[in-house]
Amino acid sequence: MAQTPEHHPWVPCRFYERVRALHQDPQASVDNPLLAFSLIKRLYSDWPNVIYSEEATENTQALHDGFQEVEQELPGAEDLDGAARALMRLQDVYGLSVKGLVHGTFQGTGATRTPLYSPSRRVGLSADDCFHVGKVAYDTGDYYHSIAWLEEAVGLFRLSYGSWNPEDRSSLEDALDHLAFSYFMAGNVSHALSLSREFLHYDPSNRRVLRNVVKYKELLEKGTPTRTEPLLRPNSTHLQSRDAYEELCQRPRGQSAPQHHPHLVCSYETNGSPFLLLQPAKKEMVQTQPYVALYHDFISDAEAETIKGLAGPWLQRSVVASGEEQQKAEYRISKSAWLKDTAHPVVRALEQRIGAVTGLDLRPPYAEYLQVVNYGMGGHYEPHFDHATSRKSPLYRMKSGNRIATVMIYLSAVEAGGSTAFIAANFSVPVLKNAALFWWNLHRNGAGASATLHAACPVLAGDKWVANKWIHEYGQEFRRPCSTDPQE
Image (cartoon, rainbow, N blue to C red; front, side, top):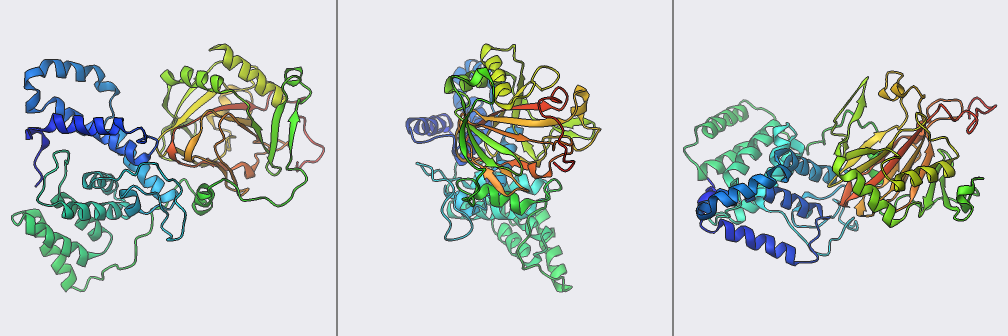
């Protein structure tokens, strides 16, 4: 079994050298999800080992006091497991090869595909990193992912067997043990037996694995069929259109080139508002059904940074509506905060601009506060509607009707991923810094627009910030009146 790093005389030195080497390289950006995962893992597991190592005895009190001051801000077990799940999410949505990820490349499983992201500095994962990702899947009974990641862990541990890495918290034996049981649960008993025998080569006295070997032999002697076909991915209960969603997310530049359409044009718009006379809005019609418009340069760099700075201290894990309640969910991974227009003059000016461009009434309670959202590593929001699809939705607590329209402002750029995909309408809009997307969630007759089913694709590389403004039905009766056509 692997030794524990606490007893190695070079723990502080090794940790210092790794951190120094990382930060001296200007090309090593934590936008790279592999580097971000390694950093989270190092801060969660390696740094406490330094603090409580034997070497630290001479400065024990000072080190412990300093560690306790920042301990609450360091990544915890939930952060590390979340980062592992993010890597699996990126693997799935973008069709990435696990072997490629382990070696620092973001290549699709198809041999001829262009990498979706090419970092300037390639950063791979260690055997222990792969083991942790695989174990997160293993612990939830997800053997599709655990097998892929534990296979890589076993391969890397085999290559380095006999040499000891003090940062490792797992070993070849650990990886073989978990991989063997994963194969057994997947129905491949013969391979589970083979891996268990290999385990016993390194740890022949392990009674539990000895019992497993006997069990696997008996099953094979009884003629238990062995599964040979590849495992299928677990299906999400929240995602009914996974293939379309993932295809849209994988489009490198958003939507494919549209056919000629006379209404898909660019224009300068004042919308009859004096507020826009001197600086008209730069409007690009993206789609007519559903109605989706993109306003370029809607916000300045300085305004975006101000809003991010105001929201930063208040960010909390985003929640979703579940019946009459709100709760956290794996199909929405982000952090968000709400800003009133009284929070800062920049927020007030942005609200005025939104009102001028949309022509809608944003006075409370006709619109919600500005929601600022941060999507970090692998952050996403699976296909959903912004409008309520049930009268029991918490949205109706505002007493101002359903959400008639959405304005979503991109406050930052990302290196790869993060597009807004409109699933039913089959197009996506890539992240365009300082631009704002606008669409109608409801038809003029008040019915929900099914074509607005949309998703936030996972962030493949970078840090995505958006600001959402949701506008409700009440107060808009004379600004967007009903149509004489009941179907409109």
